[in-house]
Length: 120
Image (spheres, rainbow, N blue to C red):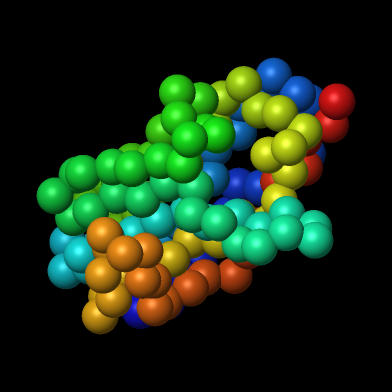
């Protein structure tokens, strides 16, 4: 499967931004998909994940501010980000857990990243 992320950009602190990830095949066949991010000098971390049944999970630092969703008809997932903070600045990656375990965050297909920069 190929994943194409888009929607990154420069936004002021407190503002919103929406990321999109288009998949090349039917996402209902994919156990779980998620958004990860990697800030300069830091390890990549899972931001949010969603199963093909609609179960979602979030890392603590974004819970209540970010919302992950999916549109099965468009084979796409989204990350709605609100109340953005400078510490949210990172390259954001879309990924799919096809053979790996969603519960153990074992993502085995990755899209290219999209840069999100939050200015203070």
